[in-house]
Amino acid sequence: MSESVELVVIGAGPAGIEAAVAAAQAGAEVTLIDSSPRPGGQYFKQISKAFQSDDHTEHQREAQELFQKLASSNVRVLQDTLVWGIFEGAQPDTWLLTLHGSQAPARLSARAVVIAAGAYDRSIPFPGWDLPGVMTAGAVLTMIKNQRVLPGRRVLLSGTGPLQLEAAAQLVEAGAEVVGVLESASRLIWRGIPYLPALWGQWARMREGWGYLKTLAGARVPYRLGWSVIAAHGEERVNEVVFARLDPQGRPILQSRKTGKVDTVVAGYSLTPSTELFRLLDCEMIFDSGRGGFLPRRNENLETSREGIYAAGDCAGIGGAPMSRMEGRIAGCAAALRLGHGGEDQNHQGKTALRRERRFAKMLGDLFSPPAGLYTLAKEDTILCRCEQVTLGQIREAFTFGAQTITDVKNITRSGMGNCQGRTCGSIIAQIMAAETNRKPEDVRYYNIRPPVHPVPLEVIEEHGAEKAPEREG
Amino acid sequence: MRITKFTSELPAVQRGKAIEVQVNGRRAQAFEGELISTVLQAEGISVFGRKHQTGRPSGIYCGMGVCYECLVTVNGAGNIRACQTLVADKMKIETEAQVKP
Ligand code: FES
Image (cartoon, rainbow over all chains, first blue to last red; front, side, top):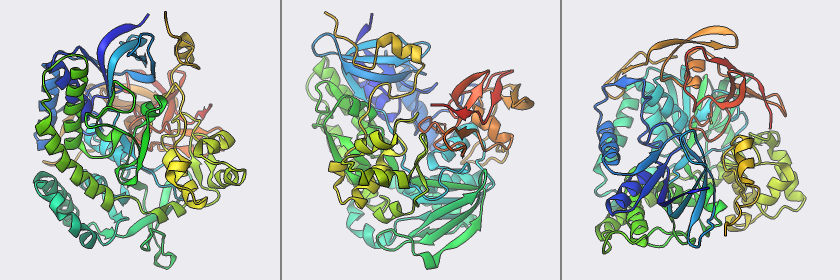
């Protein structure tokens, strides 16, 4: 039997918390589901319960305010719970979610769902990127901010966007030796001029970025524009890194190549939206490379092409925490309204503020997307799908076998069939396939996905017979 | 390495109670509230797993539960994400089990 609720919000990051609280305030009955032990998502990730800190940073104050809002609402929160499937429900206009978590019911039926699943680091494969010691900027931020542990002693960072600046500054604060920060984007000032209006009003963010640059300058960390790591060497862990200047397309200029001794390489090429649930629901997707790739199409209430399914925050296009919070409120109110709660559209103001955030998101996306040439770094024997250990050479063979989409590549090579369900390799292989076979991303598409979207114990799935969608009752 | 240097941007944190775990049969110090990956890092271990297809080493990559590169064996149960799982007193952690599909 499944429990029935009005609204389920998936993901307790900035977008999910705002959505849940807004809907509950409008009078909806809301269940908020999150995979972590504590709410916050990646941006407001909390330290472990058993840790104590007297963190009085601005960021922490903002986080506490948000948690306070959640705690004083009547949202039911299920932490430590994975949503591994979502299906059309037995009753018309309902959705059925299958869950895995010690405190959670196995199934939940909802009349509306806000998906706020967030995003994760985008990877660029290069020879040696799968060696231990090579990791994402997000991993480093979590280690330092939440666990107070260093990833290594001598670190090179390579990537694009503000996230890696923050990671570099944190590494310096924590006492690591940062040998350099390589930013793949070049001519930032020149290219940034048309976007100057988008910076208006973004003072807090500029202050933050300036702070990171100051920390790096104080530690004499070189920050190079138009450079990237091109290979990592080592047996059981990276011990040497090769990096080079990039040409305007982002391909490495081999004559400029340099090597350095490091024990850690941090690679963070912006973010990829978490779109598994939208794909499982067969939501209509659009391609927007500046916002992170394939995204669910939404109307102005942030509802997807499936009625009653809303998308808020970075999972629907990379935009950062302030934008996610605004979208959360809009989606939460819209979902509540759909369920017959709340009055007239209270979102008018919110939508104006959202337009400003979107301008800023567009600027970041346009300036800091990994250039196409970076996808030429992998060699024939470089592993692209880590889970199934599939090399670029094997992927290319699938192209010559006549694969038309990356789902064909998956069926031929097993890429994307492992534990991570293609989260790491999906956008990489799609990009390489589009470039090498002269296709558009819209034609290469994204991996088809089937439940469970997270590995869960076999007993859990068997209980549902989830190879197909659970049977309609009645 | 656990961080011991603190600044205003990176304020001090009081870890939980000191506990003891076993890592590959050896005793190791840990603190409540730490992730398995943190304890392994503090022990200087960077290879968490080995791919059964190729024998290649794997370790922490995404640090947020997405990539499944950090799988270890905990109290005999395989395929546990070290970056998502808190340590507990007397926990037995084993690395480098070959990850099975
Ligand atoms: S490091 Fe990616 S899941 Fe643990």
